[in-house]
Image (cartoon, rainbow over all chains, first blue to last red; front, side, top):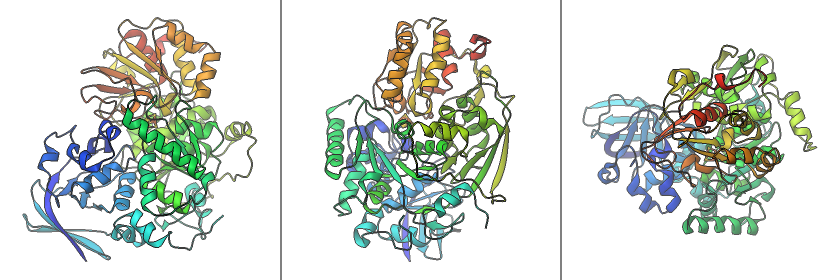
Length: 173
Length: 421
Ligand code: SF4
C-alpha cells in the first residue's frame, strides 16, 4: 500500500493544460524548477506561491483538457504534487500523469473543500480517500495492470529504462 | 464478437482480438512530434538509455509551432531536434514546410487502418483517412521511439450519424462546432467517435480533416471516418498500396448512437473562453472584431483560403481590422499563390504568414493586444491561448472570419454570398 497525505486545493471543471502552465512560459524554458513558479498563473496568480510539497489538487470534470503537453503533468510533480483527484480527466492528461509518476484519481470531489486535509491509500485493489478534516471517506478504483506498474516505477521513462521494453505478448507485424 | 472500427484497427496491431475496456500494447505504424513536444521527448528518450530508434522510418519530427523561430532559446531547441533527426536517421520537416497535421495527410503518410500517434492533441485529424489517429505525451513518444509500441486502453465507440445535406453557408467547421457544442464532454470523453451517414458524401477530404481535427475538443480519443470513394480518390495521388481499410462489423457494439440532422444547420461560432460555448453566428451578430486569423490545422487548407477569398474578392476589409492569413503548408501556400489569392488577400490589407501554426497558441508572432476581440478559424479559444489573457477569442469558419474582416463585426456570412457560390 502507498499512502499520500496533504492539503487540498480546489479547482472547477475544465481546467486545461494551458491554465496549468501557459505556452508562453514553456517557450522560454523546459526547466521545471522555473516553470513551477507559474502554475495556474492565468487563473490564480497567487497559486504557485501558496503550494506546499505534498499538497493535493482536486477538481471537477475534464481536468487537463486541451493541449497534450506533458509539461503540464511534470510541472505539478516538480512542485511536489503527487496526486490529483478529479471527477474526470482529459485522456491525454491522464496518460501524461501516469507516465510522469503523478497519480490521477477519478472520484467525486464535491465534498472536498479547499484546505481540507486528505489521506489517500492506494492498493492494487482500490483507492480510499480519507478526508481527515471532515472525517469522511470516498472510494475510487485503482488503475490496473501495466498502468499501475508504470506509475509504481515512477513513470514511463523509469519503466522502459528498467525493463528495456513493454511486456511481450504483442504481435510484431 | 462484432467489433467497431477502432476495435478492429487495434486488434490488427495486437496478437489477439481486443474489445473496449482492455489495456493493450499495440505496435504502431507512425509517430509524429512537433517542436512543442519533440525536445522533451528527446530528453526523455535519452533518459531511457536506449541508444537506437526501434524503427526510424516510423518517426517524424516537424518544426511547426515556432515559425519563424522567435528567440535564441527556441533556436537551440530547433537545433537539438535537427541534430537528433540527423543522428537517428528519422524524417524532419523543417521550419516553413507546414503544420504536422497537414503534412502527414498531404504527403501520403496516413494510411487507412493504421495507428498514427502524434505528440500533439490534434492528432485525431488523421481519422479523416480511416486511420486511428490520437494524441500522446512526450514520455509516450519517447517510448514509441524506443520500442515501437504504446500502452493503450481500447476505447468504447460512439456512432455519429450525420443526415442530410448542409446549406451552402454551412461549412465543415460549422458542423464541427455544432457537434462540439452538442456532444460536450460527457458523451465522448475517452471514446472513439465513428462517423457514418449520407452527409459524408458531401464532405471532401479537406472537410473531413477539419471535422476530425476538432473532435478532440469533445474529449474523444479519436474520430474515424469510413473508407469510401472520397478516401480512395484522395489516396490515388500517392499510388500508395499496402493498406487495409476498416469497416465496422455488422452489429458492432456502440456505447451510444447519436444522430445529427444537418440540413437545418446555420453557421456556428464558439464564444470565449470554451470551445463548447457555441452560438449561431446570427445570435452574436454585431460583436466588434479587431483581429481575424485564417489558418491553423483546422482551417488553413486551400479550400478554406478559397472560401475566405470568395468574400474578400468583392468586399474591402474594414479599416483597422488586423487580418492574418496562414496557409497550413508550403504546398497550400504555392497553390494559393498560383491561384492569385495570396495577392488578393495582401491587396486587401492582409498579412500573409509563413506556413505553420501561426498565432494559434501564442508561440509565434501575431499576439492580440489587451481587450481585443479575435475571430479565428482555429480550434481553441481558452483564456490566454493566443498569448494574452486580456484578449477574447471567437472561433468560426473561414467564411465567418472573412465576413468579420469585411465588417469589423461578427456577421452571418450568408448575406455576403452569391447564389452561385
Ligand atoms: S495549428 Fe494550433 S491547434 Fe494546430 S497543431 Fe498548431 S498550435 Fe496546435
